[in-house]
Image 1 (tube, chains in turn yellow, green, cyan):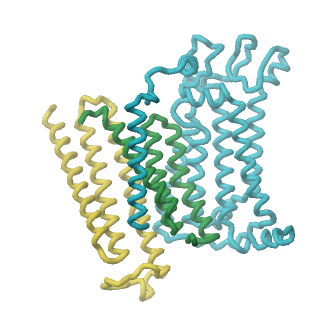
Image 2 (tube, helix red, strand yellow; image 1 turned 180 degrees about the vertical axis):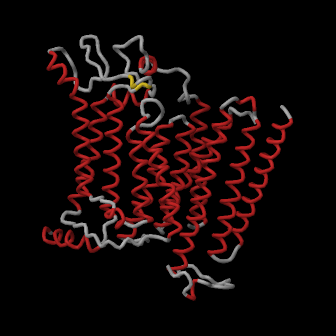
Image 3 (cartoon, rainbow over the protein chains, first blue to last red; image 1 turned 90 degrees about the vertical axis):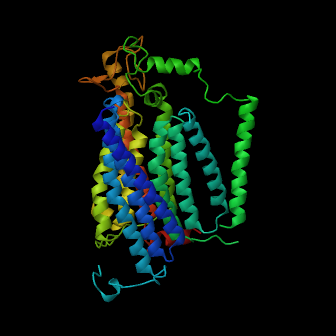
Amino acid sequence: MSELNLVFYGIGLGLIAIGSFFEVVGAIGVLKLPSFFLRLHALTVSCIGGSILPLLGVAILAIGLEEMGSQRLFITAICLISVFIILILAPSGSHSLARAAYNSNTAPKQPLEYDALSRGVNKD
Amino acid sequence: MNIVVLPYLLVIICSLTSTFLAYLIVKERNLVVAILLLLGQGIFHSLLYYLLMAPDLFITYIPVSVGITPLLLFLLIKKTEWREYD
Amino acid sequence: MIKRDVLVAFSLSLLVLSISLIIWLEGYIRIATPIISSLGESYLYYSYNPWYSNYTSFSLNVVSAIIWDYRGFDTFLETTVLMASIIAIYTLLRGFEEKVFLQPKGLSTITKTATKIVIPLIIAYALAIATHGQLTPGGGFQGGATLAVISSLIIAVYSLEFLYYMGYRSKRLVVIRGLCLIGLIIVAITPLLIGFILNTKSYIFQNMSKEDSFISMPSFLFDAPLAGSIFFYNVFELLIVFTGLTTALMLLSLRDVELKKAFEVREVYE
């Protein structure tokens, strides 16, 4: 294994480790945070940090594995495409969830600092 | 761990989790929660199809269980009732 | 969800595990046998085999070859069963009318834009599944189900009104579905007609040439295997499944204003 491949290997493993850290943080947040919107925030943290960073890590790790031949480029491309799709879909999904919960007044908003939507700003 | 054992272990975990979820779906009174559990069971079933080397069933089951069935059931609940009474 | 339910479910899954362990240890059933039966072996051997041109179907995907070539009539009847289910929904909601209000509401702009980005990807994937049914795993039903996810996304995100705006009506979809079913029949009886004109022997659902009839559908497009009629069947099946599932989704998401007349009709019959 050459030195460049070793660097790729290290970066990939590091990204996967950071992703698992985000996953654990998100799980603790979902269990411990008080209101619906805060729990949704924790869910998004675990979704973005816990799935996009490991996917990027696998993509970089697969470039470094030279003995796999041209198969490693397929793995890299699949990972990058899934990163793109998750990066678009996960935030918009949690946005629509939060919006529906806010508009229908089903979830309590109690730990509240500042509410821009109630003053008629961006009332779309 | 020997890498050949790993798919069989995943098969066991997926099938046991889907049995677990099936009982909860039958017992659940709140139908919205029951549909969400059904969605989770669909994901485990499609993973099972992939592990048992049936890629065409896998391709069918993903859109049907994740895309179409939840919307149909939610529409049905919206037209009727979202709670099951005794 | 009570704690007792979770416990019972957990013990149920443990019961399943113990039963499967007993079956495995006692050796009643051999799980995942390495021996293939002789019938399966012959399918695997002949499905893409240019040296036996009387038995092959030039399809690299064996499942596709079995579904549309070796048991084509069966699959055709399955497709007509799907049509019957749509007709059942129609009789249930007899007398509904689709009203166009031309005020699509839907969810917020962010969600709509994200859906707009994803929809072309889904269309490309569904078309790839259906038209490569003879090369890779997949086929007409799989592609149609994937394409029907688009209409479910549009109903959920953009509202039903947007589907009307795009020109979807349930009656038009049913007409397209019937035309595709007729197209399937036409592809099935084409070898019969050619045989009738040329005055030779030929069969319904014939794909490649047989021992006593030389008529065969095109097996190659340039250098890619087309597998004869399997390609056409897959394309028609894609349209049939897409229109069928979209019709079911549209009919189930009708508004109360549109269903008012249907309820009146039902009261008259009762």
